[in-house]
Image (cartoon, rainbow, N blue to C red; front, side, top):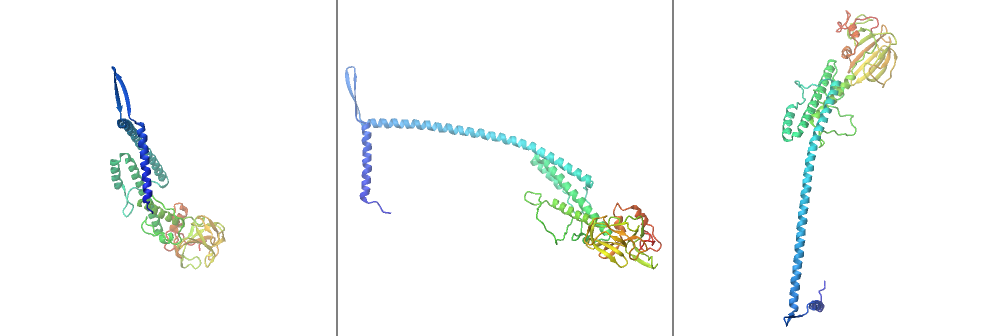
Length: 428
């Protein structure tokens, strides 16, 4: 950047001096030397006010005026500041009063919310009891369901001491957890009963459940092949996590549901509207050779053409003829579990058909190795025949007439001699 030349700087300084001189000249014009003539008692006096004195007097007046204006301004500022502080204080007081009223309102609202939750919990427990019965609250040996009563009791004491208004909420939470644990026990015991029933029937639960383990009720070992779908995560807490007690409830209910579905595939419906079992399961005297033989099912005597029903829901896996069985239908109810219906006079189903329990799948006949119209009914597990009677008797709606008839044994029957009738016309 070029520095100004000395000649230019001198010119600027000269102009400034000229302006200052002009200003002083104007001021001097305002305050010229003045003379005042005063006459008093015949005497004449001359009073002379010099320009310097006038300037000093004017300066003093200006200073006093500025001081006055400054003091007035300062006083106004002080008053404004005090007024602002007073306004802020009043506003703060109003907010405090409003906050206290809101707290009181929240306390009242908290009581209302707690009452609503209690009424809802009452409703849930009553509906559950109406459909499921009284839920178990006691623990049994071997059960792995937690008991949070002592923990929730301590929580209630702490919350009530720290926040008295939230004490009822803590009690409500304790009641909810107790309900969850009772429902978990119920599901576990139902599952345990289902497992015991399957073992009694000679069915391996792992086979029937198709991937669900047969360990303790409540443990879930669901197979992971052929699974999928969109993710809808469940959570019980705001951070997205789930309380272990609720997770355990979900696992127990899921296991109970799987066992209930598996039990629904167990033979549970009488396959024919017959009034007698003409031949039982086990060793017997063959109706043709009169020698000892093994009978792998139950024979239900009935009129030709009478309907034959699927003993449980499943899929028809065979329709046709088998040696000794004549016209035969087989229904698969799960991995390794099959029911067989033989000696039919007509088919009422086809391979691949999904059938419900009690659905007609054929008609009674006397085809194959048979001495008269009847239904030969088998239950097979992994290809091996098993006694169908425990399956049918396990269901509460099985006719007591059939059970009483099957209790009359024939003299030449095998292991079921005390339970089934001997060979008669209509037995295979």
